[in-house]
Amino acid sequence: MKKYLIISLIICLSALAACTTATSNNTEPFVGTWTLTSYTPSGGAAVTGAALATMMTETIVVKGDNTYTGTGTFQSSAPSTFSGTWSKSGSTYTVTASGGSASSGTISGNLFTTDDAASNIYVFTKS
Image (cartoon, rainbow, N blue to C red; front, side, top):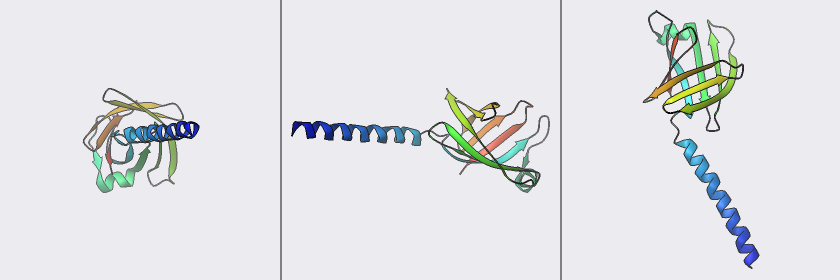
């Protein structure tokens, strides 16, 4: 009987640990679906709305296991897919594409703002 009690206790603790991990990932504000809503070329004016949709689209799904996947188009091209990893240091999030390029940004409310090596600024809205 004692053997079954120990096995039951181990199973319950394992289930509790799994729930705790899942819950902590759910509270991470970066986890979720993000859609590009503004693009500002280096030294230029912000492009939003229909003009942005004609120029480019991008949707990123950020997962609690520190990975992300996304799809995007550029100037009405066929959609492309991409993926990578993300990390957090303080209030800064760094996304690293599978190809190795990385960019960092911050979250304010439901907006994630990041830039690239050419100083273009991208703003994503969480849905």
